[in-house]
Image (cartoon, rainbow, N blue to C red; front, side, top):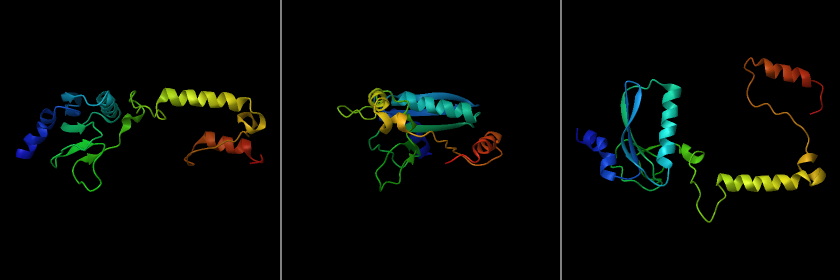
Length: 168
């Protein structure tokens, strides 16, 4: 009983970087919302919403999500977290799916994972490669790569038939 009340009030006690989500009759409710660093909490809530749309209706439940990169004091409670010390057994690790949806995921001055920076670098490199001649992009061979198994896919079988006898 004590642990249950500790869990229900976990985010209130922390008052930072924490979400309590309740699913009731298939509907999602945010019971506690304490934003953390930048907008990661919104990206996390969006991912939870997408799960509910894809796999719903979800059963009734309540769960807590820590949205920090720090070392939270989880007090051996079943709290979802993206990180913990190697030797710690508390918390439930979950993948941080905010990588693609967290617009501020940039750590100045190193910008290698900022979308705008990466896109601009790629565009500049592509412009150089386009005029570089045979060693550049235009000098590459067209190659077809099929990813996936043979599971009765008529398109794959047709592609294999069309390419039969072609040099690989």
